[in-house]
Length: 211
Length: 85
Ligand SMILES: [Zn+2]
Picture 1 (spheres, rainbow over the protein chains, first blue to last red):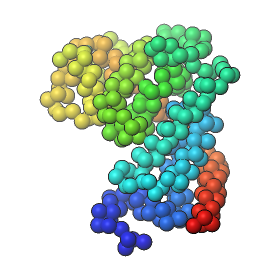
Picture 2 (picture 1 turned 90 degrees about the vertical axis):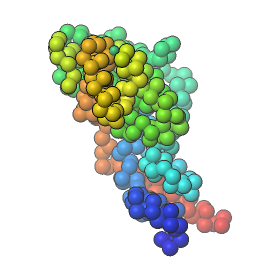
Picture 3 (picture 1 turned 30 degrees about the vertical axis):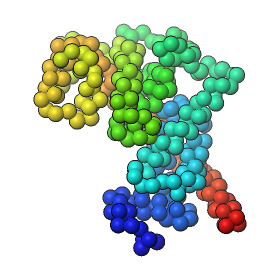
């Protein structure tokens, strides 16, 4: 199989071991595919969860993403990283599921209400704690989770991929099919919204500046 | 440097991609502008707390189940393709 590769492909293989596994998958090797799943399932799960905010959906998305990747593996040209290609499938699956949920008639208490500027969780006002209070890390994390959940999906997705999942701005753009400036502008808007909603919880002692 | 310019460079700043001279300017602006300082600080702390407290682990048993389910579908697909080929 290796002898069928062009010099360019050989060079790419030298750069990233995934590509060798992908070549084996293209030839129908399921054990190579299992290896790729083992390598990336947790990241894909996290991304799906960040976007959908629903564990069950995220588990389904892991399944659907990998099966789709297997079906379409011949379309993978190796000009991006396999992981980025996978993330792009996962993001599409996640957004599709989000849309499906939105169009369903039953609205749970966790559902978001769309507003001009985005959306806020239905019960936002109820759980909004007193900012004067001191929070431990777990409490803060819970507040953050709810706040991030309240961001519009477009902002939440770039923020999650870039800032939480650690993709570079370029990889985020590739995964979302957006331009780099578009990613940067969404990121900025996501950050400003988070600042609006969260800065009260992160009181910086006066006179102290970020180093 | 004004706030708009500062915010436009924020992503690169977080990436530590900015040139040293620009970095100095950004930090000078942040030192004198509480709005931008709070924005940077909130983002940084949000990322940190969120990353440290993720409840997003996928249990090993569920991973195995997911893999098996996917592999089964893949094997079926392979079989179908072999038949039609
Ligand atoms: Zn400023």
